[in-house]
Amino acid sequence: MRPDTAPAVLTIDLGAIVANWRLLQAKHSSGATGAVVKADGYGLGAGPVAAALAAAGCKHFFVATPDEALELRKTIPDAALVVLGGLFAGADHDFAAHRIIPALGSLAEIDAWSSLARRLDRALPAFLHFDTGMSRLGLDAREYAVLAEDHGRLTGIDIRHVMSHLVSAEAPDDPLNAIQRDRFNAGRARLPAAPASLVNSAGMFLGKTFAFDLARPGSALYGINPTPGRPNPMRPTVSLAARVLSVRDIPPRATVGYTASWTAQRASRIATVGVGYADGWHRSHSNAGSAYFDGHPVPLVGRVSMDLTTFDVTDHPEVQPGTWLEFLGPHRLVDDAARDAGTIGYEVLTALGRRFHRVCSPA
Ligand SMILES: *Cc1c(COP(=O)(O)O)cnc(C)c1O
Image (tube, rainbow, N blue to C red; front, top):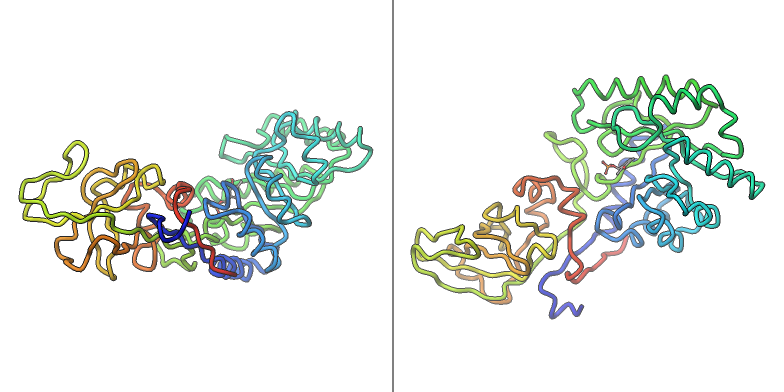
């Protein structure tokens, strides 16, 4: 897409992402800090993000699916590359051929990986994933007990790390955090010794007893606050600017957009912008929050439609067709937009659309 015709420009600050990784790494100086780049690097581009972080010294990368791993392998040929979703049935040969590390989450996956190791006659690397409370992926307590009694099932598997995942890391007072940590420690004690990995971004702020050997931050790298309710220690990494396509004057009592969900209370000026729910600016932003013009908020009015959003710019006569409005940027962080739309920053980022002109500022 040509920048001069794109309705919106998304700028991704790789330098800020690297700075965020360094800040987390300094915080976790007792161990290693990896980077979670699933979902195309939380929507910001797994390739450029991983290349910048690998150049900065990051050695562990996490994705969700085999396809994501195969795609990223070209960019980071030497890093440890872990698929959090586990050993997908039928993917085991691809994993082995490209040195992709599955986070094994069931006895069936362990058996499949071990038997492939025997057939290939070489050890294959893996993370072992235990469920300590998420009830999603990872060996459950019953499977865990079977494995603890029979380490032979791990024959041929080079356990790089044992891992688990916290349910409530953003809530430091939630007793579940300590319960999960204690279950994780008890479980590890019943297996062959291996390094451990428990925390995501927010978990890195829970204190030393949660840190273990390898941290797995994602959201904080991209600027989402890992300590909700407290000041955000991370740097913002994205800005989204969209240009006004049209401006019109409407009389009092005129309505704006589908379902006439907003009614002008006074003679108003409405600016229409070329960003809609097809660009990941979800309908939940309808009549919620603002964009910014020259540092001033302009309220989003009416429903977000597929390709368009509308703003009340009555108080800003300078806004004209071609004027740029800030959707995300210094005045409006990802977390702010998420709060206004009743969601979390993760969803705002991963939804950001493909029609934007994308610019990566260098690391
Ligand atoms: C997504 C994910 C992470 C990263 O979580 P953030 O909250 O984005 O830091 C870490 N570990 C696992 C298992 C995940 O699925």
